[in-house]
Length: 279
Image (cartoon, rainbow, N blue to C red; front, side, top):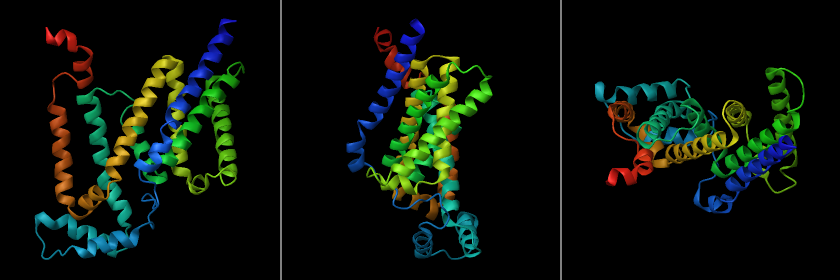
């Protein structure tokens, strides 16, 4: 009896997760940028970025403009400017994640998952990414409840769960034009795999910890990834790292070193112990 109650509780909490994320979608549709151009695809926006590089006059060679000249030579030789720009942006995302953990006190799921999630949001757009991620997490929660009593080892059970999630996403993509979600039909496999990775980590956290803890860590990870997506999706940031690569490389390294030097209380700890600190 108690097991059934607990299963229902997990279903309700899973629905709460989806409703929490989806409740903000109407506002996000206005407040956030949709990904009209997928910068993770090498040929998307290539002409715009090449024109941006040509608009900046770089003459002569010295240490201060060596990266600028190297980027232009690489683009001339056929390297995608999208890929080059994302290679500058990814360390920035890692720095933001490190800042959130070291200074703010946000836990989440490590370094790589929120960084990859931010890139997935950059690929799908914030609104579409949140819809798809919510659907995958909900499918993972309901799928785990559905296969809980299947008597097979952990890895085959996880494979069955991923099969269920994949079939659910397949159904969503097939139905998306019919239910007015045409933007989902153009989503590539890369962001879907990243979202499934988060769902797997979420399920593992449920097993090793509990649902409320895993829910909190997942929510922190998604919020952190969305903030990072908002930063790297800024045209000003993209223009800055592409046209001033030397400054961005040195600046990000200095930021990482400063974060590493921080030894004080995290902001979350200051808030948590604010009453004690006031005494």
